Every structure is written in structure tokens, then in C-alpha cells.
Image (cartoon, helix red, strand yellow):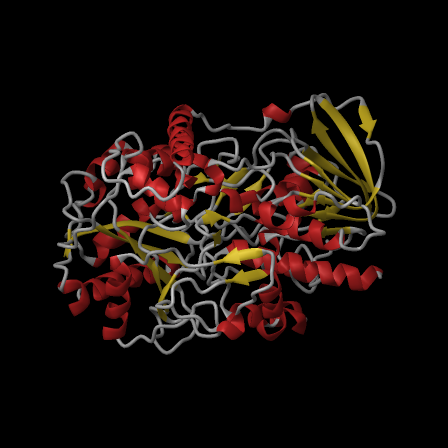
Length: 623
């Protein structure tokens, strides 16, 4: 999140602005950002879905039936609805609880910190945690999920990071299906991608990229001064700079982003909006799915119940229902429909259709943040007016979401010779702000420790644990479909402490990078203060870092594996390799929930690949 930019929105100077764009465009965007900041500052995230509530009876039959009903217009659902509606004889309905995004704040990458506090975020949070998230109020971590056409691609960090090739090779072995091997899935990444190498200092292996797809992938311009410092540090440690979306992953690189000329390119904008003129594609927004109706005798999915405008509707699917509501909401909808763990559904007083381990294997990446350093690297800060002028020309700070410095490194801290990373490290030129305190739900004690002393020319390291061992659950709070589910990620909870041990090695890797000649040349100095909750341990000792990690680690907002693929239900899988739900006819699940393992990448674009792949599977099956 660009909290540094957000915190300075109301402080700007108009002098010496290099005006290229029309002054009226600048003024309009300035007003839009200022109004958005004011709304965001007072916005209260929902704690349930009662805004969509409607009486369960009467149920109104929707105006017509469809061949395919797709639930959820997120990354996967949007791509599936697009590809299936390419077949003119198929009528496709896409149901989405949110709305179409506007063309204002959502398009500005740096404004995602504002958009998270808006109607584009479901506002989920975890149940209280005991092994991580201890620096948060009530020990609950936020779990932002996108709500709207485009799903989480409306509010995410825009990082385009595929899973590691070996992740897919493992998937192929788990599901006994070679179509999931890397050599067979990477064509779907290329199919979806419209890659432009905007930064020629960034490594790019063009044979692994597509240039004719619907979703744009570019580099932020201009490159940040910290990028070269970081890349040189990696070279000094013996790493080779590489395109992390190729078959080589280890070492430093420059982030590839889902932007188009500096503007956010979300999946809804790429896959749905340009195709709304298709007569066989219908998109229903502000429509909240409460249940999939399944014939008890034949165990066949027949129809979908949803609310809209205070009424409850039923829409029938003649061929298939495809559930793409995401790794949190897909298991919730399945369980509400009678598909899930037998004992849990019994506790919820829900009639059982199929006993499957839905929601039983939640995975998420663990986010380690902050690791703060001071430096002598002075970076001029432009006024907001100038930043807007730059943005309108397709470059500058507003074109980046997440971090201004766009360098990232992938490492295996357990086995240096491995090509499968278990840690990703990126950095930013920022301190911890009041806005970040609110977003991360930091408690006062931790926040005061992070901000105790001003940091000169701050450099912050952030890292992710990728192939996590720990797992948690998604469970229903009640049988009321408008209650949010109970999200319990249980980060760093594995019995062998493998995850926290790997994260500790990740901390050591940060300091190894920070101590290179490249960073010494900018006088990089650790500026972190002892965390009060960990003062029983020697500062910077192994025991201290274990304590620190349990306090600062949060979810990376990458939930997955809650309806995993497998060969049969006895393996605690929920869907087969074609994503069909075991024991139920005419029902598939397609989103991050079907990942059989955690991945060494970000879920979003791997979900897009799944959408492209499973659309081909469906076309082949029914053509």
C-alpha cells in the first residue's frame, strides 16, 4: 500500500509543476483523490453481508434460464464468463455481489490504500489468532477481498507473479493429470497476457510472455533508485538477475505489474466490460448468492438462489454451475448448500448433500513486516499536483501500488541450490504511517514501537513465506448466509515449527542483503526498535526474532486451498482435476480455493490461468 502518498494527499504545492496534461484533468483528479481520501478516512468496513439481506420467501423465478451460471465476477469467474460466451449458442450468466468499478480512484494504482476502505472490499478479518497477528487489536488480522466485477484485482498490489514451474509439476503429480504440468499450463498464462517491456533494465524472457492477451503487464516507470541498489546487492551475493515469470526464479528482479500506461488494468476491465455487447452474456451485479440448489436424489446442481434489491431469486442452469466466489466465499457457499464436512454441517443444522472436506485446508502466505532501516539515499518528493500530471502521462509514483521501489527477490533460504523459492523479499522507501496502522489493525504498543524515532531516508524490507506448511480453516458462523464465515489461517502453527524457522532464515537473508557493499554505499543502518512484547529476549537474537515474527506476521491476503484438487475424496480433496465437485453433477469450482498446495507466487494471475484452462476443458467437453 502506498501509505506515504496517501498520508500526504492534503499537502501539496502547485509551484514548478511541469504541466503536460490539461490543467482541468489535473484539477479533476486532485478533487477525486481528495474526496476519496475523506470518504476512506471515515469508511467503516462491514462485518457481515446484511446489506444484501432479503426474505427467504417468496422465491422469484428469474426471467430466463442459462446454459452456464458463473458465481462470482472475480479474476477466474470473469475470465470463464468471457471465454464461454465466445460460443454464441451458449447463454452465460455471471452473478456478482458487487458493482462495476468506477473509472476514477480504482484506476490509480497508488490509491489502493483508499479503495481498501470502500465498497470494493468485503472487509473480512480473521478470528483471534494465537501463533501470529499478535501485534493487532484483538489478535485479528484483516483479510481484504475484492468485491465487484474484477474481484480482488480491483484492490490488490498489481504484482504479476506466477507460481513456480515446480508448483505446477507437483500439482500434476497430485492429481494424476499431466495437463497441470508447467509445460502444459504456461500457454494459458501467455494467452491471457499482453506484455510490454517498458523498462529495458528489467530482465524479461520474452518466450514466456504473451503479447496478444486481454490483460496488460508492464513495468512501472521510471525505475526507483533503490531498484539498482537491490539488484546489485543480489549480484554481490552471487545471484543472477532473471525474469521471475520464466523457468528461472531465484535472485533479484523488477516487478511486473498489471498496469496499462500507468493505470490499473483489472480483470473486469479486461475481460468483461469490452464484451458486454454480447447478446449471450448477462452480468448481474449487486446480486448475492445464498445457495446452490442440488437435487437430493440425483445429486445434480440445478439452480442458484440469490438476492437482489430486497428479493430472493432462483436462476436455473441447464448445463453447469461454476462457483468462482474465491477461497473464502466458495467454501462458504458450498457448505450452505450442503456440501462440506459432515460434523460441521450437522452442527450448523444444514442437511448434508455430500461429505467433503470443504474449507479444511486453508493456506495463506505469511507476511513479515516491517523491517526498517535508515540510509543516506535522498529521493526528491514531488507535489501531489506534479504526481497527477505525471500519472496522466503514464509514469510516476501514482502508477505503482504496494511499494514505490519495484525490486523483488526470490530465494530458497533452506537450500541455496534449489530453483524453488520459499521466501520473497521486496523493499520500499517508507516508514510506518497512521494510515498503515489502520489498514494493518496494529495495536498502539506495536505502532509506537515502529514509529518511536524518525528514520532518515527510510528503507523498509518486507518479505513473504511462500510454500507454507501451516494450514487453517474456513467454517460457517451459522446457517445464515449473510453471516461472514469464520476465517482461521493459523499462520506459523505447524507442529514442527518449519514455517517460523524458514521465516527466521528469511530475516537473516534480509540482513545478508542489507550488509552488502551495495547497501553499505547508501549507509544502510538497521533502525528497528526493540518490540516491547519481546524484551525478555536479547535484541536481534534468534529467540527475539521468533517472538517478533509471531507478533508482526500477518496474512498476505492470499487465501487458497480451501476446495483443493485431488484424485478422490478420500484424499480430503473437494474437486477433481477438471474442477468438478466430487459426488455432485454439473458443479465445478474454479478459483484459488482449488489449489492443491500453496504456491511460490501470488494467487491472482494463477487464478486467471485456471479460468483460461478450465474454459477450454468445458468447451471441449460440450462441443
